[in-house]
Length: 292
Image (cartoon, rainbow, N blue to C red; front, side):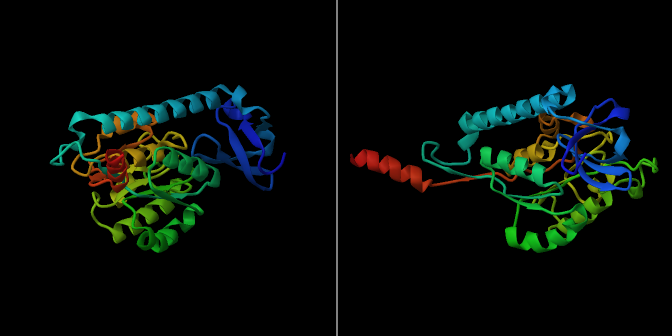
């Protein structure tokens, strides 16, 4: 067994697929491949996996991820074609352009960051992604926030409840929740208004209440459960495409996540999406047609 191998934990019935991140003595540090979980296990408890698609849990997680992405794409199509969508404009026939909220995504896992950026690109959400260790996220935000000027910040990576700490109200019981809290504090020092800067924070089993108290709009995990790698992305996308006059529908957002209400929660927040006129590209195209 070597670093980078795909493994499952025998003592847990092989329920979650991990990638070996490092070794320490007779222990292995593990990072979930589909869930944002950071764990450790004795090497003898690990079993190498050659074909991850044979694992029922992994296959089901990917099916749910594709389903969530499909639902969001469908909602975007309905939004674009909705009759009242251009209600703010005097002439609904004139071409318009879209300004979705801009996302700054900090991720403690490079593979998850790559997947997240692919989703943003697919859904045409302007986004900048940065990979850094969870402990470095507060310092990274100090530097990146004034450069990027985002509308939405995603602070995520890996987390988990420490085996020897079972007091779920103490931040010391979590592997990275305190780092996420510090990062949220930096974001709120930069912009106090929760409607001007939407903050999505947390990972698997993170201290939901502490993240909200620090200033997050949406956070994981109310039920201290594992959340899917793309759940924070789906929340950010909904914030990016909800009109700035409207409140993000929390219940609907959670319904689009893979983990559900035990995995993600939040507070009332205004969207960050705007439209404008004219769309010069479309207008010029129509003008050329008329000339011809």
